[in-house]
Image (cartoon, rainbow, N blue to C red; front, side, top):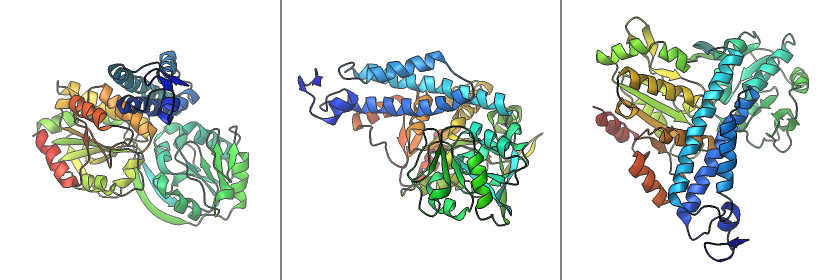
Length: 436
């Protein structure tokens, strides 16, 4: 291949893979940011399509964005920034389609108490993000004597009326994706992995791990259709689960449920009973430094509410945050679980609604956003927030490796994008002081 920028045959992976000369790392950085954002958006769009939700403008943008990364198409920094921001805007539309698709298919989510543990008898554990797979499994396993459990980001399934109507959807088991090698080994029944966030399995449970469509792992059984009879039969042959009661938790604070309390929330803020809102969540991971989010949340003041979503919530949900009194609504949990990373649209809707209620911009709200990031979908969500002009977001535990110092400076100058520091209490104090 020939690179017009360096005027010679492409000599490095930068020229061949992303279409720019390795001499311009900032262009390469923005192209990689765009590619990761598009990948994350396409994951969300795949879920939306399975729910019957499509948008031709989104599909057209994916083509345009990928074309822009081809060799010798675009060497302009500002144009790339525009494409990156447009990716964020298109991802907002995709997340809206996801939200609408889920509620049309399964009903509007509402708060629900979920049993976390196991009940005696055969069971199937469902992980990933795909509610259509779970729905089909529930339909096919009805009356079989096999219980169904959610894992990881499937926890919000219990909030949808169309899913929790199935009496054999009995509870939730386990936490975030990075713990699955331990949790899947201990869960004696088969595991159905419906999307990404699945790890290469240990031999101890490899023969009972099933995946769907493009999701695949060595030694697992890949299903190319939504016929889950093999999973159900496997559950009947596996060792039954014990009766192991754990705990109960409350989930299901969809943006519709929260906005139903909007007038009471506004009144509480004006009365000085509620002084700050936090959004703490995102993608979790196993590397050191993620206890930052736990400490940040645990030390949030008692007159604040924390919205959480994504698998990052498993870093903060074990703590007892208590409740806050809203006149006319009684005590409301201070930690409100809004669902999957797919449900980030809901958090945005809440912020926009509050800004309208207080007649100010989102950036003028007593709101702090602290996001943990790990993979492409987190990039897509961050780009959406930036494209909406949201400033002062903290991301961590480390800067994305594909973002060069120059590009990071642009994001910091334009959006006041901040990295989580080594001291969560100091960052918390700074966040509170900035809106005092």
